Image (cartoon, rainbow, N blue to C red; front, side, top):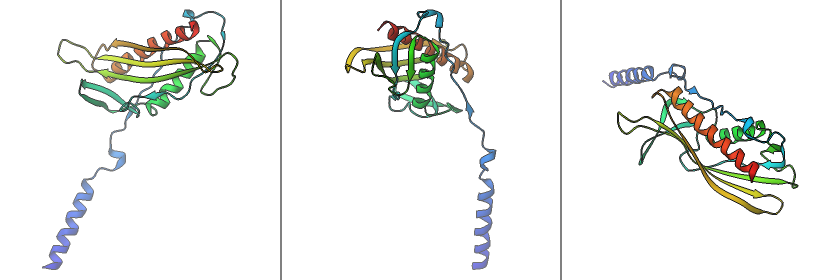
Length: 202
């Protein structure tokens, strides 16, 4: 009797092991990238004598991961299944922001660290929204929303120049992941272009 029970137990364990999918059988996550358009014609033709230092981007809790955030309703947050950013959002956005400010050719230098104290400004960025808000009815559409709290500081004098809340939104054409990412990319690009103009004008 004990022998039969032993074989039944072993057989059951083997069946349960076979039912667990191998890692390679799991669907691979699609990685989505952002490529915001920077309007270089919208800035002054010659670079400003400003050395811009952009430290790490801060995020509101719940945003800083490689998951693409969906807002189902004001009280519920979710993610796009089997889709992700190339890195945690704070790291990824920081890299894009530094590259975008540099690509604008509006500054003497742009870096993630302090290069010079002369004509040097520090741009502090806290992202409070970087998400897609799902429609609450059949007549509404998904809206991509980007909100940043931004502070510009004179690095040499340690003096606050300004502190502002910036936001942009864009309606997604369809409820498809690629269209939701396009809408986020558009809203992000709008925010960056406005921010570049503000720092240039300081």
